[in-house]
Length: 360
Image (cartoon, rainbow, N blue to C red; front, side, top):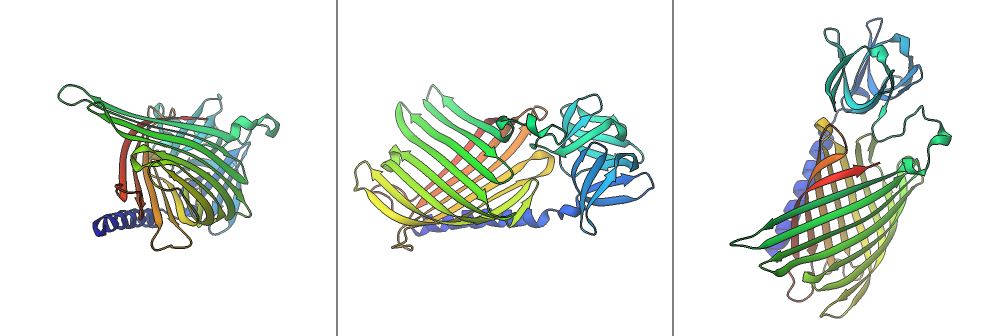
């Protein structure tokens, strides 16, 4: 027991340290992008949008500035943006500029593209709608996205093993709320005998009260044959707060209360009120690499030190194939139950490497 708890908290502490280091290493938003002007001046800030004939850039020294296109000599960003050319072509790429090589699009699906700054007609954050599209033309499909992940391994001969894991999520995101629905599962056999059989379904709605404060409600259904768990349902409501809310960088702690019912295959059923405390962290890293980490502490209100669960999942996602929506995801998931069913280990650790396809 002591080793299991030590291992669990060491893992969680390491993940938290990594999150803090990544947060500390990121430049401040207003010092990330650069706008080079025709008069030789350089404005450091965060490019918000560039559409029509006006560029908006957020700065530390003067708030949001609006700059006319004919005043701009070049643009440089520290992360990929969506850029539309005067011929209608659209690329997801990092913008680069210097006086020697001029304007360029780097890390695009076609590699590095040299062009004149005047050829760029619109720029906006990736995964956001085109700012020049008429509002009436933006249907409900514009706010929905989906993501499917599949991992599979098998062997035959001296050992016969099969391991299959999959995950599907769909997200609806507007200016004031976020709805996420998902299902994931694991199945494995060893010499014809089942060794893993788990399925989890989740639903979560977040609704903003302000730029940073939001309320949430979530439902989680879980079944795990090898944890003696026939069905566990958890319904939780609570509040969260965006400590960091930037394009490509978010950190939001949350706190809620829930009601949980667990039906076991060979043990008495359990019903309890639980506390739910944790955080969700996301950061876009170098060359579109994305790191996410979610952690939740779930103690029973009546006995918070004796009956509790810890859930942690860290995912690193790497895009390839020219930004076409294909990613390689590596995840580590921990589940720790301080009072599991009889003959069930307290700590489960799952490693997964899967191919992911994003749909928008």
